Each structure stands twice: as C-alpha cells, then as structure tokens.
Length: 141
Image (cartoon, rainbow, N blue to C red):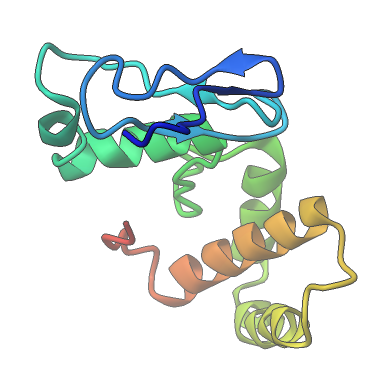
C-alpha cells in the first residue's frame, strides 16, 4: 500500500486488504458510492473462492441483481422477463424480426437512453438470442 492510500470515501471505510487479497467491492444504487465489500461464503482465500466459475457467476448475479433467465422454462426470470418470453413463445415467427429490432436499437447508441431502459434492452436481447438458439444455455461469464 502506498503512504497516501485511500482508506475511506463517501463516509465508508474501505479497509483495503481486510478479509484477504485481492479486495473486492461492488457498487450499485443500493450500495451508493461507498460500495460494499465481497462477503466470503467459504473459508477459502478470496482468489480461490472467486476462481471457481460458478462462485463468480453467483457473486456477479447477486451483486448486480442480474439473473440468468431461461426463457424456455421461465426459470430465473423476473415477472417482466417471463411475460416477455411467454409472448415470444406464443408468436415464434416474431422472434427473428424482434431480435433485429432490439439489436438495431442497441447499435444506435445508448448515450441518451436511461440506464433502466438499456438494461431492459439487454435483457430482451438475451431472451431473444436464447430463444433463437433454441433456448440453449451457454457459458457467458
């Protein structure tokens, strides 16, 4: 650590190195600018625990609030995602054109689009891609 280390900001103590190295913090609307430290789930070192792909996936989903939605079964989907997937399953011919429309929307740029709409567009794109691929679950992380 440097002599002029940053140990706190926005009223939150960071305690760098506490709980092991590397130190992980996540930031979202709930945590604010101070963020929240990663809470270990096992007695392994942080680097070993998060070195496991499934543990890292769980951490990312939990910290981000993003779920792995399976549009074919609705498993892991929010109500909004499940309703959207059900609508698409009822009209399978619309999936390809909807996929192109959402992809064009995202390609057009996101500078002026509110974050909540950007996230919803990415969630729809994920659902559409999964349905277009026959619902196959792929390793994305």
